[in-house]
Image 1 (tube, rainbow, N blue to C red):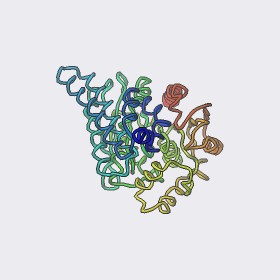
Image 2 (image 1 turned 90 degrees about the vertical axis):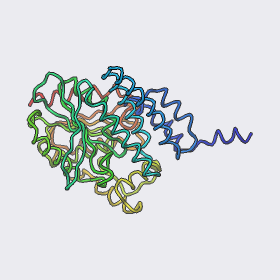
Image 3 (image 1 turned 180 degrees about the vertical axis):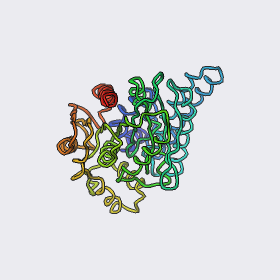
Image 4 (image 1 turned 30 degrees about the vertical axis):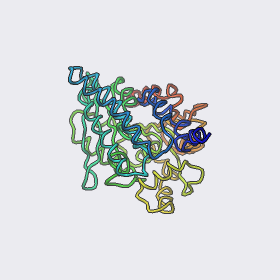
Length: 362
């Protein structure tokens, strides 16, 4: 009887993962069997990162085997899956920062191994920022000279290593992609806190792109997911080198009150803003507002929201759409969860088609 009771006493954070994260994990590259087996094996959140790292190591090993046998593209796919599994091991695991960082570096290592062997291949780039660097992955479509580029902005717990599926949808449409970790995100979380004034790092990205001769600098789009769905429009308010914007499940205005939000998300926000407590974190959250400035968005914008989103209420998307000055598509998807990962086919190709149309029409 005691054993049965213990088996039923699964950590509520694990239960939350099973209930809410499966669509995102699978849509972004985690095999469904991996998700089911890893989450079923866990009872305590403290073991989350280790369990996912162990599963990631299997894919990493398969990558090395394929590469040693001369199958470089297969190796890139195994390493990409490994990177995603390592990433999801660390993405909200802020209760053990050293373990989190180790998993993050493994995710970066595996994606970097994959980059030169992808189709099309990718390139790791270092973007100067405040005396240090932000890091990104630049990929260019095959057979296109000086393509337009989509700058891809991460969220609170996403990172560039999670972006393969999104990247590929832009690439096959003739658009280059530059997925980068901003301040407080992925590799950027160690040197910098989250930056509400996201036009600053995006300005640095645009400055970096101007040093290259293989990108069309007159055709820069921006795309953001979750918190990045707020940060991308924020950048578009001020950075006029941006010609089109896609915002996925981003807030119009955040509150200093974290009541009702998942505990692990709140703690991740506190840690990644480098706040000593929730009061300090709340002050950072208040700086995340598009009120009064969204009118400065004059470029075309495509806003996606799910009407079952428990993190970003659909009203937030409506407020942003009402205030922008440029052409606006507002897509509210019935039944969609946060980032509509449960119904990804309702927006991923559609937003890629739209972005291609906007940038190639210039």
